[in-house]
Image 1 (tube, rainbow, N blue to C red):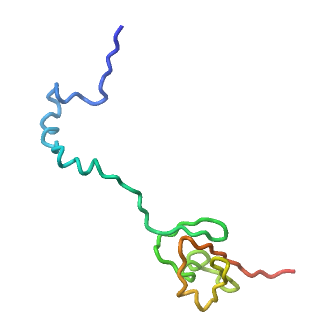
Image 2: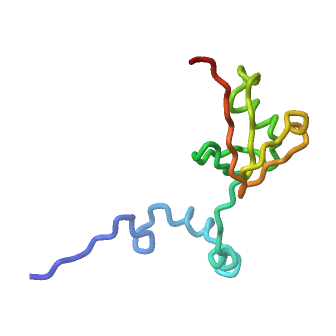
Image 3: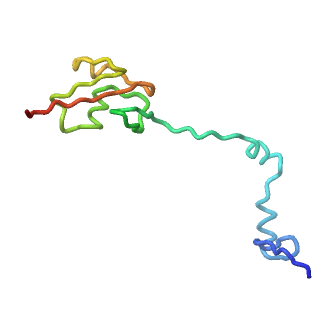
Length: 114
């Protein structure tokens, strides 16, 4: 017994169905070749930051500490201390201090209690 493998698409060579449409849409191989030979890499804009031992993604390329705090904790910014790579950054420098993907950021919030 022989088995025949049937194509999943209609055979446009041996039938007249869609033949005129397919021949008019066909592009020469020389046009498609550069497209087919390209190697594409996935490039996303933004940065990944490690904040309090958690990796988070931000859709910006430059981010100051103040902008980071505005995104992370917009309603509570009093009683906050920020350290970047184990160095505390004074609050007066938060607007100008830019963070990078390799930085480890620690955000500490003061609490009351006893």
